[in-house]
Image 1 (cartoon, rainbow, N blue to C red):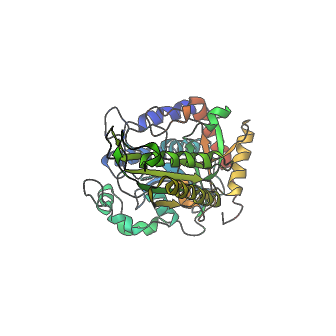
Image 2: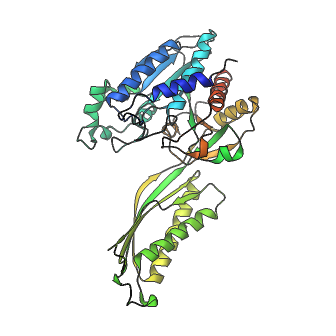
Image 3: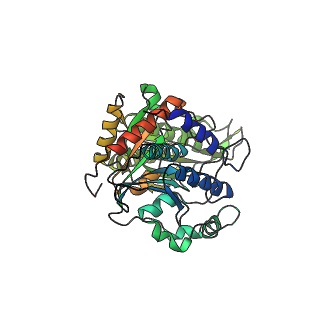
Length: 413
């Protein structure tokens, strides 16, 4: 087997050169840097034996025909947009690893009973416009045309930016795969978490992409003098928020079902060193791979918030700001990924994804699955994001094995 790691890492380094900020990696959806990266990717796909094009939603599509031209395709991909000041591997690894796998098939003159389409999506991150998964939703047939009217911080409409990029807002529906045109969707992605590193494993099999619910919580107590109001008579909004934060942590920590809960932002008013906070606000993010677990946890946590607020004499207001269902990976695809991992001599480990991915757009539309790749310290969305040459090589070898052994077991997930 040809070694893939060094070449893949070199290409990831080169790909990081398409950036809006010299010395940093920032490549937002539908920018000139995104278009330059797309052109480079299409050229690379051509060299790998694929016919490459840009679809109406701005996704780069490279098709490698099977033994019979026009056969249904196995879709493999990830995203090529980034957050601001990003790492090199989030999204980009999955696209370039797929290109490397197809290039090896082409080098060997190997054709399969199905086609392969490598997809380089835009807008997984949702940084430029207030929407996400634009490219993958378009391919999955789930694109909401209302997104075209959203604007970036400079007032540019998505529809206008897409047209300038070379896409076609009026033809986005044509990007959707018709029934029978696609077999499944696979995504290779860095874990963005510390589990694989802690387990000493290069890869893992994703069970589901966690569902997530987010809340904005506001508390109103009574501001007062820090020196003159006795502790027993206080209605301290910030102290109540602190107790609620610990209550959310306690509920999540007691679960063995992959539940996590995070208070990511908290603020207090009036914000003076000698004034008891009369108002506080914080965010709560609750995630789990099973929707029932997440819903039950949210109910338990909010019940605890109500008890704390009543006991401390503060008013509580809770707004749900986001609610997304979990996206379970298809059992048949998981089995095939696990078999390939086992054949590679790696102990198979199954784990959920706490972050969202393009693959979630296909849940319920196509059988889908994900292969996670170890990243140093679990760090992501950060220039310190890092993988090893050996793990990059292993990811391509396992992906290639999955492709060669792929069986389309059922037309439904």
